[in-house]
Image (tube, one colour):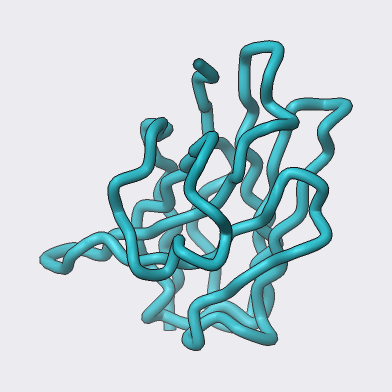
Length: 126
């Protein structure tokens, strides 16, 4: 199965942008559904965004819709999360996830994904 490594987190001010990357190892990356979750201090992990294998279908949490964009480059085995207009409430550890079977449309209701990255911290100051 694939292994995932996130990067791109950091400390930014409210209103700024960040792009997270998730590099996957393994020959079957293009067949995996991919996505992002986040976990703020003291809170449960929550769904952020997901994308299907071709990139043609994407779903977002209501809290990030219109501000965040998920994309993938199968040639580079990488999935991205472009985050614009960041707010202090976006502060969290962001986790990349992959699953070979769970359809993108089911991701908002699930946290039992097959593969997880180690997470990258995003801190948004007010």
